Amino acid sequence: MNTSNNMRIIRKPEVLSILAISKSTLHERINDGFLPPPIKLGERAVGWLENEIQQTLKAMAAGIQDDLLADYIVTLVNARKVAWDELRR
Image (cartoon, rainbow, N blue to C red; front, side, top):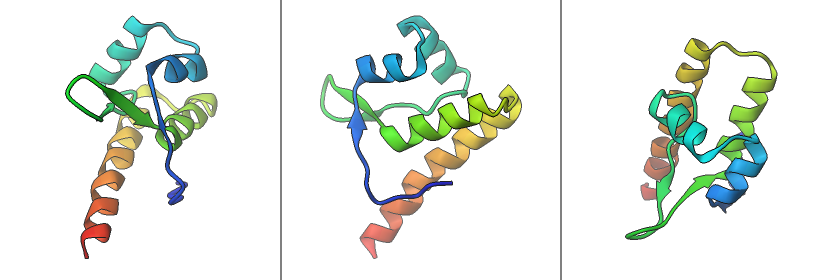
């Protein structure tokens, strides 16, 4: 997994473009655990870590089945928490 410190936040239009899916499919796949959830940026703004979206796309392109993909998404989201814990040290 790429855990580069070079993080970039991307907004919904770019996520939709990268994944070539509709808004409803985006939210369905997030709710089903097949895409990482967004990060809250403010009261009414969210974004995604570009690296997480790219890693998910690579897994999908490799033909990873949905059950394994869901496990991978959990790993990506947990990596956010690990990165935060490392920053706080």
